[in-house]
Amino acid sequence: MRAVVVYESMYGNTHLIADAIGTGLEQGFDVTVIPVAEADQAVVTEADLVVVGGPTHVHGMSRSSTRKSAADAAASGGGELTLEPGADGPGLREWLDALGKSRPHAMAAAFDTRTVMPAAFTGRASKGVGRELRHHGFDLVTEPESFIVTKENHLVAEEGDRARTWGARLADLASPAGRPVAGS
Ligand SMILES: Cc1cc2nc3c(=O)[nH]c(=O)nc-3n(C[C@H](O)[C@H](O)[C@H](O)COP(=O)(O)O)c2cc1C
Figure 1 (cartoon, rainbow, N blue to C red):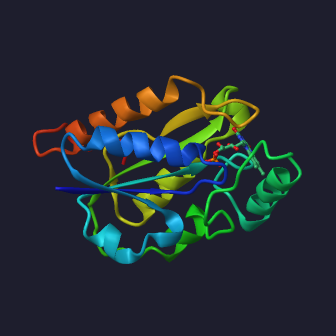
Figure 2 (cartoon, helix red, strand yellow):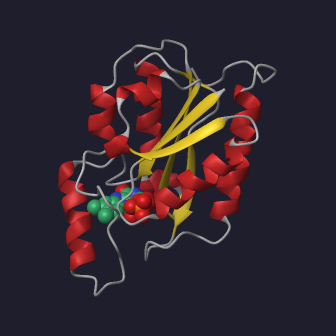
């Protein structure tokens, strides 16, 4: 079985989480981890499980204006923040808008990175990602999940391990013997 992890990342944190989720998924899947700018329709249609995540910007998925703000912050940050290749877009919002409905009821999951405060204050990009995936006909195998960065945009230490565990759990849930689909 094949899984693809499609991620958007400005500063590298969501990229690290995507890699860790991919490592966890390897217990049940052949895994490809790919930035959103390189994720064409074929990688999605060929996958049995599609996992999609990005950074939370202004309570939801990024927009071109928030990506510009992120790039400006990196440029004026004295080298503290480094931009990922492809950080100038497109983001998940545009990618999801362009996604076809070629695999109705294929399995999917959504994740994000966000800052350390309660989700009621921060918002969660994964909520919108999950909603869009369902809109495109996917069945979510579990609820959207967030992974936490500090206010200085560094991944909180244990989140890499938690992402690997979440990926392994996804592999179980999406296996033929896994639980029935949830969150639709
Ligand atoms: C323009 C901008 C807006 C942001 N808005 C939010 C927000 O509303 N809620 C939140 O939790 N984090 C917010 N953040 C922090 C991002 O979630 C954080 O930078 C991101 O998770 C880091 O992931 P990345 O390294 O993959 O880009 C914002 C960051 C930027 C640059």
